[in-house]
Amino acid sequence: MKAINADKWGKMMEFKTEKKFVSLVIYLHNNGGLLLPFLDQVLPVFEKGFEQFELVCVDDACTDETMELLKGYVEDRKLSAMVSVVHMSFFQGLESGMNAGRDIAIGDFVYEFDDLTVDYDPELILEVYRLLLEGNDIVAAGREGSQRLTSRLFYFFYNRTSRGAGKIGPETFRLISRRAINRIKSMGQYIPYRKAVYMNCGLGAKRITYAGKGVENKGKWKKQTEERANLAFDSFVYFTNALEKISAVLSGCFLLATILVGIYIIHDAISSYQPVEGWMSTMGFLALGFFGVFALLTIILKYLSVLLNLIFRQQRYLVADIEKIVRQ
Picture 1 (cartoon, rainbow, N blue to C red):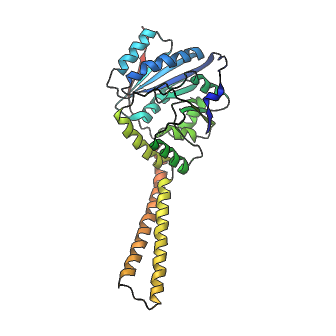
Picture 2: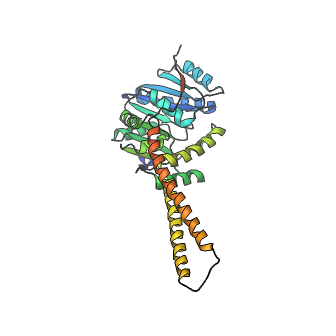
Picture 3: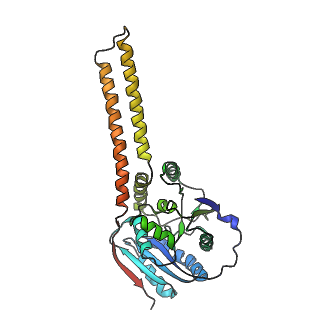
C-alpha cells in the first residue's frame, strides 16, 4: 500500500461532475456533536462532485439526540440524496456496524467514514475518487504523524507479523469500488477487521496522508477504547501468525534447554563430579515437558487459524430495521 502526501497535489483541477452513483456510509454512536459539522462540510462536496449519491447512516444503538439531529437536518436541508438509516439491534461496535452499512449500500463506489472529525480539506474526498479512477480499487486517507504510542506499536507489530503482503496504517476514511466489495464478499460474509481485509484482497490499493488541522475529536466514547483493545487482540489472532511464532520460539528455547541438560547429564555421568541426586533428571523432565506443551500449543494455534477462516463465512451482525428518511 503506497503512501502519498496529499499536500503534494497542489491546487485541484476543475472537477467534472461524475455520473457514477456513489454511497456515503457513516457510523453513528452518540456522536451527535460531530454529525452536523460533518454533514455541513462533506455533503456540499458530494453535491458538487456527483450527480447522484446516497447517505447510509449506521445507528449503533444511539442513546442521545444523534438520530433526531439527523432527521431534522435532512428535513431542513431538503437533501436530494437518498438517506437510509441502519438501526443495529444493539451496540455492536464500529467494524460490525460499518459492515452492515456497506452491505446495504448500492453505489458503484462506496465511501466509508469511520470518524466524523473533519480535520482535512473536504476537497480531499474528490481527490481520493480521482486516485481510484487511476486504476485502484481501494484508496484510503489518513492523518500523518501524531499517532499514539499504542497505535504505533500495534501497526509496527501487525505489519511485521501479518500473513498478507498489504501494510496498514491509520485511516480516517476510504473509498472502495464495487469490484472490491464483490471480491471481499466472495472471501467471506463477515469481516472482523475491514482495513486488513481491504489491503489484502488482491486488488490495487493506495493510501494518502494529509496534514491534520488539529481539530479535537469530541465524539469519542468510553466504549471505544475497550473496543479498540479487543479489536487489536482479535486482529493479531485473525490476520497474523504472531502467536504461532511466539509459541514456536518458546518451543525452540525449551528444546534447546532439554538438549543442554541432556549434554550436561552425559558429561556428569562420565566425569567424577556427582551432583545432587535427582536434580538432573528433574531438570531434564521439566525442560522436555515445557517443550512438549509449547509444541502442542503451536499445533493447536495452527488448527485454530484454519477454524477462523471458516468463521469468516458467517454473518456476525444483527440489524433491527432499515429506515428510509424522506424529505417532506
